[in-house]
Image 1 (cartoon, one colour):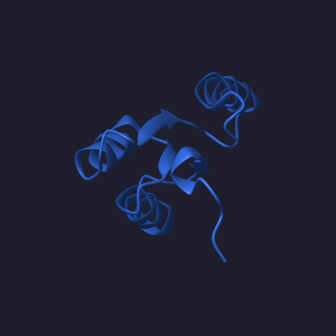
Image 2 (tube, helix red, strand yellow; image 1 turned 60 degrees about the vertical axis):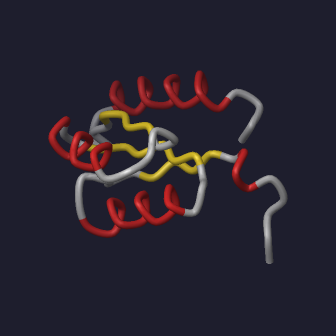
Image 3 (cartoon, helix red, strand yellow; image 1 turned 45 degrees about the vertical axis):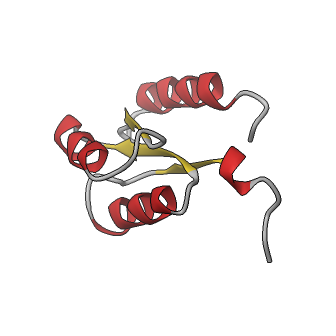
Length: 84
């Protein structure tokens, strides 16, 4: 099943410093999707940016912090708009 206009959609992935999140972000970027990759550390974000295209954007997110979540939500809204 294909989603129409998939290359125009955004995917937000958390936990992209390493492991499954990191790998998924790389794979979806390679398939042409617009990936918003949330990392806990700047070092993790830098590693991911170095391995992906300019389509992928990173943000720092600590999922245990309400303030960090609110900041990340605002950042995502700014980038995604009505594109969903």
